[in-house]
Image 1 (cartoon, rainbow, N blue to C red):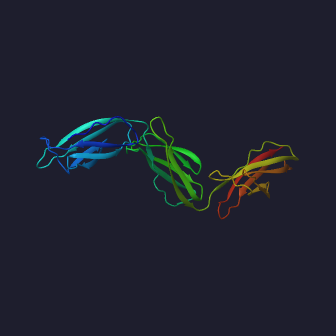
Image 2: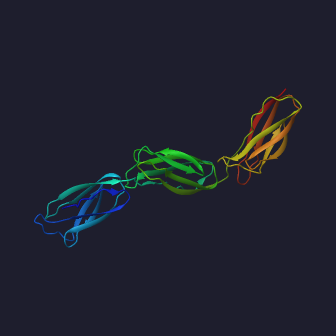
Image 3: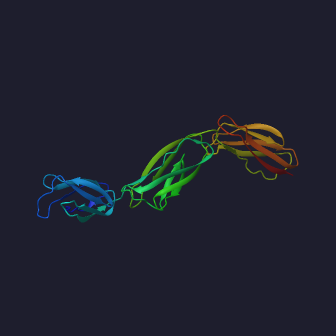
Length: 279
C-alpha cells in the first residue's frame, strides 16, 4: 500500500490523494477498497484495474494533516497501513450552529444553544460565540465540546431574530448564521419618570421620562398617563419615546407623581411612582 507524497497546500481547497494497492510480489489488487483515515476520519477509495486509487479531499485543517492508508486484512492477505503527512497553510473555516427554537411566549425565558466547531468537525472549546438577538449583541462561551448555552428573556412579540457568529481571527475565517422564532402574547412596557429635585411652591416643574417596550424599543407618539397628587392628565411621547409635562407646584410638602400605561391588545399595563418635595 502506498500514498503518493502531498506537497504544501492551501486550507479550504480540494486535493487529490493517490496511491497503489498491490501484493508484495508487485501484482495489482484491482477493484479493492483502500481505507483512508484522514485526520481521524475514515473514508474508502476503490482501486482501478491497475491497483491505483484516487480520492478527492477538502482540506479544512490548517497545519499538519495526517493520511493513514491501509487494509484491514482478510483470509488471503495480511493487514497493512502506511502514513504520510502534509502541511496546509491559511485560515481555517469554522461553523457556528443554532439549534431550532419553537414558538414561545412573550416575557418568558428561553435557552439558546448551539455549537462552534472547525469545518473539520473538531470543537472550538472555551471560545466566545457572538449572539445578536433582535439587534442587541451578547456573548456565550463554549464548553469543552464546543457547545454554548445562553439564557434569554423574550421581551418582543412576533418574529425574533438570532444571528450567531464568529468575527474571525488570525487562524479562522468569520462565519454567521441566522435563525428566527416566534413569540406570542402581550409585550411588557416600561414607563420611567426622571428624578425631580426639591422645588419652591408656586413654581413650575417639568416632569419628564420615557415610554418603551421591555425590549428597549421606543413607543413614539403614545400617551402616558400622569397622575400628580390625585389629578390625572395625559402626555404624548415624541419620536424618541420621551415625554415632558409642565406642572405648577401649588402643594407644600411631599408631591406624588404616578406615571403609567393602561395596557392594550399588544402591551401589558405598567405604572411607576416617584415623589418630590415642595418647600
